[in-house]
Image (cartoon, rainbow, N blue to C red):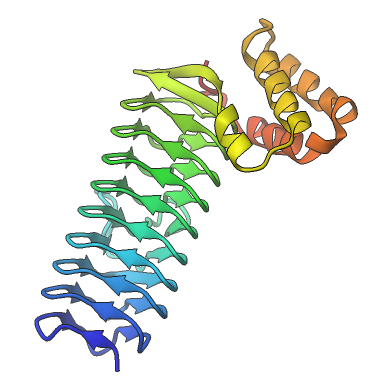
Length: 264
């Protein structure tokens, strides 16, 4: 049988795998689904149309699946979906999506989410990210795989953070952060590329050299964004091993908002 503490309140309509553990005084609502091996600590509230995958570790005092902080929300059945093998530390707040977007807030797999993190409505977070304490995402923010957010990072609504990007402590992101870029400041600006993180993830010397060349094109050669993209595209021939990295960068830059742009 599911290991549910006798003081927990689990709605009979909720769907919990038989291996799920639920701690004292936790409340789980009727539309919640939780997969095998997941543990939910004490004093949590999981509500709304929330689906949680396998082998997650959810610590005490979390609020998952509450309605969005959006005055236009009128009770629509929007969702929160959490993947597998995530660690979610204390006092995090993840809201469901809103009808003004796709109606879905999503956290992927293998993420390390520290205390007091907020994922607002319609945020989409990839896999293997790290959010340090008090990282705060406004609505509609997208975060790529392997991104690292330093403590007290705050992100404006609709901003995108590319894969392998990294923010320093207390960064305020008002524009998109391209893949691989390290940022710092209020508002944040580009400082370097996340070279040490790439080495730890097994990037070859040729791929890291290509990332350095992309950084130079974007930030060191006084090019327009269009000119920088042309230079980055040329790296396909110069460094064939980095073709996927070039595609990742160009795909991100093509989606940059003309109004918001990228960090500079």
